[in-house]
Length: 137
Image (cartoon, rainbow, N blue to C red; front, side, top):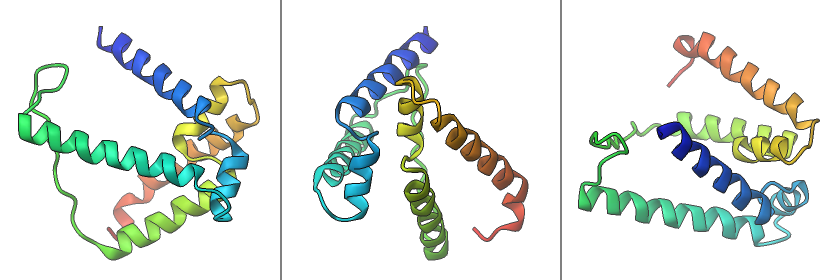
């Protein structure tokens, strides 16, 4: 049952990403050129919804689908972590033309060349896992 719920949520997320043009390379290009508000509006809307959802979960003590308490653990404040991580994420996004969510949306929409990017991202994640203990956090 849980798998079906997650599948429905994922398909809905993909449809919203595709229809809002958040997976469009041209929209992402416009964003990096500061040529359009479109992507900033999508990202800002997602941020606002996330903040409101988190506050609702905290204040009403909402449980997860399995009935467990949701744990929202605060992250340690570290400027290098977010600075270098953000720069690497942004460079990868600019190079590939898509961040992780739209990569799978583009694959689902039939853009086969995005599979190269997905395999590259998975390879990078694997390498990070191997080197994680040796990197500053």
